[in-house]
Image (cartoon, rainbow, N blue to C red; front, side, top):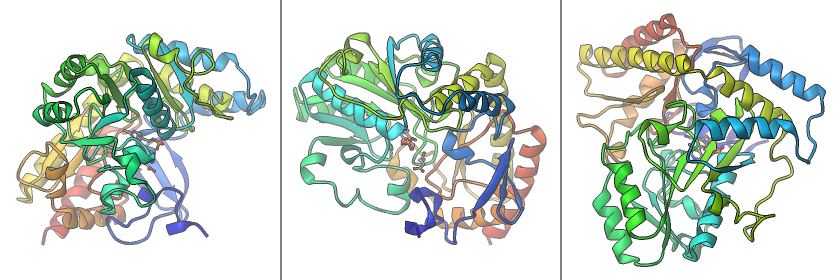
Length: 413
Ligand SMILES: Cc1ncc(COP(=O)(O)O)c(C=O)c1O
Ligand SMILES: NCC(=O)CCC(=O)O
């Protein structure tokens, strides 16, 4: 009844073979499938879940909100509460608007940077994914990469003509693109930690370098923090890597597992949005009271201690996986930033999309199924990140590493 049996392509097992598992419920670090089998979850709803599934604070907040009405289509206090929390955590953001997904945030931000600069071109990075919107599907990561689609059908050339794909972690390439398109580039949009081609951390000079290039060429810097926001640090990647963007996109964690996205940034830019300014962006369910309550409850639980604990869990998993690959004599790169991690089967560190595509994805597919049968659920693609939550215990990690050792030994023969 549904194309591929799924409502989002990455859920299908096309990148690893087989057919997708249907789930019945989730609690803490565990998913339970429709047949009652449990899995330790490392997909974590593609990063939206950070406190573990069905966290009591979120369940209670959503239940209470629902009793007061599921949608007003008008302003309410829940929006203000979440906005204040976002502005408090992200000092560079002066104004924020809530939408329903990261995709919607990207749609609005592209329109806004074009309106603000009077220029149409946007530099993006190969293997970065910013949602399923026409101009940004060119050379995109996530499902577009997993399924080997060069871009997407149905996107007019006139639309992608304004998209300039650059190599991730390659400032010289970005500089060349700016030079070749002098006075025409509205913005650089980047995943500050790339999470949609597997996990690729930014090189030390990459994000500060992008800031300087944007300043030099009078373009805006947009950080897509849909994955990293409130995950890699209390204030997200802009805090962790000390970079000041003009605009930020958010999603996933900010909705506590309900459909939320957001964009925000400099006041002068955000005040170009209707009703204050001429840039139109709207949504019937934007700022939905259940979603706002879930997001606020999630952020309230994300104390400094929570980030310390996420880092420690990430380190434990990374160490275990490195040792397991060494023991099995399988060349691998276990790349991690905080609670985002992924495994690439290759000899060399993965710095960009081309590197990510040369890794042994067939081996990943076998490993995926070995782990699935042992009760560990990974994102079903070598080109996706795994996400930890505060609900993952040391015992979960140790069980996972043990299952990984077995699955790898089996897969590598
Ligand atoms: C970095 C990034 N930006 C944007 C998006 C789009 O968000 P959504 O799926 O909520 O539309 C995603 C994930 O889907 C993402 O990982
Ligand atoms: N890395 C992939 C995503 O974050 C998106 C999930 C989806 O498209 O369903």
